[in-house]
Length: 195
Image 1: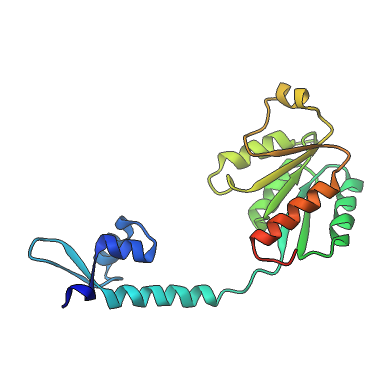
Image 2: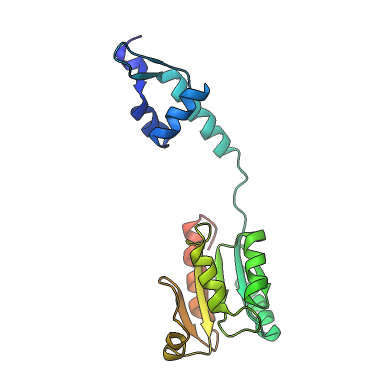
């Protein structure tokens, strides 16, 4: 085979966007055909790698387009939960509003629905917002979830209760709907939805 027709395992890993170890495992399991040179180095046919790239691209193209942006509101006051829903609906944006009344229920909804944005109160019965947020930030699956806190507590009270993890945006009640709308519109643009 000509030099142009083969990849080293490192070149194959770079082309496929996976780790070198993944390529080695694919070769060992027969997913990616390869052979060893006289010097003991693995070589992979360029055509095999390009076939995998094409299959992956086809699979990605076949995914249904994202239709909505999910926002979870965790707030113990029912009237406020309804206000969030009404206000979000008035924006006429492709968003789906989910709600929960406390941190425990919020975690259940997050595990089931995988929201794009979490808006949470801090003072709630049962599991409060502090514990819910710390639980999320401790989990590798949810560390990147964007969290906005809307609370009646001031900065000193938040610090007195252990503070919040880095990267959490904090607003003081009353609910700053204008700022929330800006955040949501910005996130919609990032994920390619009409804002």
